[in-house]
Amino acid sequence: MSRIDAATERAESAYDWVDSRLDLDDASDFLGKAFPAEDSFLLGEVALFCFGILVATGTFLAFFYEPSTTAVEYSGSVVQYQGQELPAAFTSVLYITYDVPFGMFLRRMHHWAAHLFVASIALHMLRVFFTGAYRNPREPNWLVGTGLAGLAMFAAYTGYSLPYDEFASTAVGIGYNVAASIPIVGDPLASIVFGGQFPTSATIPRLFFLHVFLIPAAIAGLIAVHMAILVRQKHTEAQRDGDVSAAGAGSAAGDTSRTSSNPEATDGGARLIDRDDDSVVIGLPAFPNQAAVSAVVFFLTMAVLSLLAGLLPVHNIAQYGPNDPASTPSLVMPDWFLMWGYGFLKLTPSWMSFDVLGIHVSSEFVGGLLLPSLVFVAVAVWPFIDRAEEPEHFTRNYLDRPFPTAVGITGVTLVMVASIAGMDVIVAEILGTSTAALRPYLIGALVLVPAAAGTLTYAILGGFEGETEGGPPPASGEDRSTSGDDGTPSPTEGSDDD
Ligand code: HEM
Image (tube, rainbow, N blue to C red; front, side):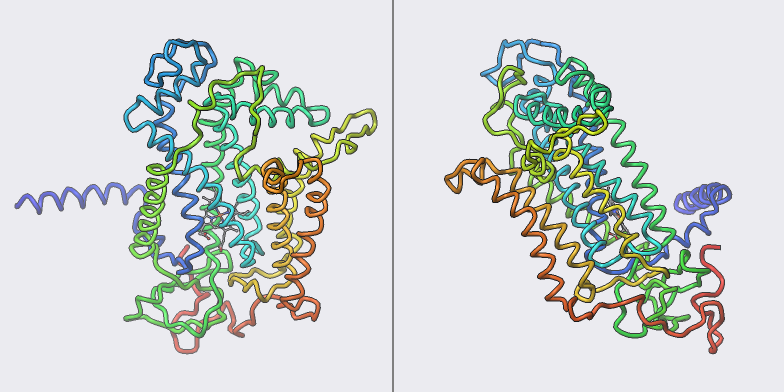
């Protein structure tokens, strides 16, 4: 027996061993699952890959980072700090940046991956929103996604605090004040998250634990649920131009176990899928086609992040210096994705502080937490407002949905105007005025601009003329539970998920 034959035999017996336990032949059906070939569907994958890259680069950083504010003598290569007693967290990030091989590159990569993670989540969410892919039966996945968006922002916020430099610590301190302003539970909650009154020696270890363990574990868990629901329900698909000749379509036993079909493999067993038949998903098979597309997306994500990490510096802690509770930097701002919340905080007038039943509600709580939370609640409940009684598996054209599209544009504009308000110091400087003089205009803009944008969108899309697309796409008239007349199995017969 040649060496190749022996190796083949060993591989076969290893396969049989695993197959006898995991039923791989059955699982291999999954590899034929269809992925609709829509470019915008790749945004979720970008988010997924960013999360993987964040875990990998974060693991590297954690090997060198010290979650402590204890003063230690710095002896690294940044001349201005040599011989100084500095917080261990701050010095360890200086070491990572300037002394650890590849440290600066991987720190930057972690930073840019965090930004791309949040950006791709936001774009993915907008894609799902504007195509109506959140409707029945996908409301649960929309809710899981909303949770993921919140956790991603919280992960970035806790990471921002870790270098314990002057700029980031001041910005993180704003979050502490907002958390402490929650009526009744604020103080204990802020103490639990920040380890006492910010900043104490317990703050950094606590935020470190949240950043490297609790939040990533929660994100990983929710991503697993998100993907499990996706696999179970399968993707939505764009409206087809016409009937599709497809092979590999087994069958399905209901809406939540729709079958997958690969239109490229039309030899043998090809059959015609009606353009309105939503019991079959038409797309690329998971393996090898979609796997190849995903690999390209992964390497492109890596390439973009490498380029950013190679060319663009991040948060220059050597310039900001270590946290100094006695001073405040002249310009403090959160990251761009928290800017809208900061804008609400800045624009909420102080007269919004009031007492109800002896409980004090501060304007800080209203602007910094209540209003941003209401935005999240509005996002979470939206699929139950724009709801579909019957399951829908085709995406919608946003141009045919004046009301949901107008609501989406209103929301996006609101977040944009609030973000500009968060940068009021810069805006005032550009316009040569003061933030106090700018404030009434920003408050007006926060109410009027989103309302105007939404109304205009609604009008342009013919909403006032009642030209809305109602209900699910027209049915083909095909009975979901019977075989086709030509003897080929109908898309609803049997099940590839049996
Ligand atoms: C860590 C964050 C997230 C990751 C890694 C992720 C990943 C994915 C992936 C890979 C898909 C399939 C491809 C696609 O349709 O893009 C998907 C689908 C979906 N996601 Fe997300 N997602 C995340 C956050 C969100 C958010 C914030 C929402 C909405 C609030 C959301 C709602 C959905 C829905 C409803 C689907 C099914 C869409 C369809 O079938 O057309 N996801 N997600």
